[in-house]
Length: 361
Ligand code: XIL
Image (cartoon, rainbow, N blue to C red; front, side):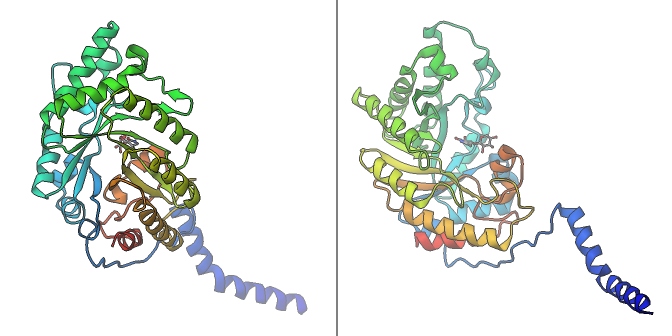
């Protein structure tokens, strides 16, 4: 009799909980883990470009500007500085030595002028996204010097008076010294100074930056970069400023480390751009969706970063690396989902946008 009662109770319990278990198992199979996405409806009191004392920029894609009016609308409404995300890199711009593909980069520059935004050119000299004819080029040191000089001067010359500032050299220094790149190998460390001199000759009014990553989090690398650049300037290289990429997470680097980095930078005379800001919230790939907790952490972080950055001496602007989470480089780079930007995949402002706006305003 007792046994029957227990079995009956178990049967009732199973019947009651079955739909819930079924739901959870189905959801787990569909998403990999049960994940409740953040819910928000953010109305910003204004735009970043109007609220801020320094230009607020964004990295843009020419095809999206051409084909997606909502994307283009967010760009021109909120931002007053545009960086071509890829279109001015040597690979896309130079299909062969004698051929320049200006179409996409020109489109971005035209778009910026219409939107009353400035253009930051990115990037003249880098070891990535090279055309294959450069990777397989063979020649003497003089041939390599001629090739690089011709590239820098053709591109800066083409946009003379229209592109206000350039990342002349990207990611060339690491703790311990110069990075061993194709340019370093064939020309030697002088290529860095040469590139600035050539760019300056081609457009003396343009502001010229050295750009690199992890400078707010790796203080050894920052010391190395500042030391090398300072040496170059002492030898006469026309380097105006340093670009801090700022691909950060909601936890790294700590605010203390960022403050220390800012003090170090302040000891030199360089102008400073925060050039490629994004805030990863899923750095280890563990989250299946953009949860309320991630949204809140990111809002707080964008706010803190905005406040910290505005304390940088000689700050000339802050640019985010992409418009919306539907088009962030980080997903391809890391190989798992993340939501690092100010707008979501539907171009709606995220809590992050509210945090960033509050810091700027
Ligand atoms: C990235 C672009 O966002 C991607 O679309 C492209 O596939 C690879 O390059 N540091 C830089 C940028 O200086 O040029 C990189 O941009 C991101 C890291």
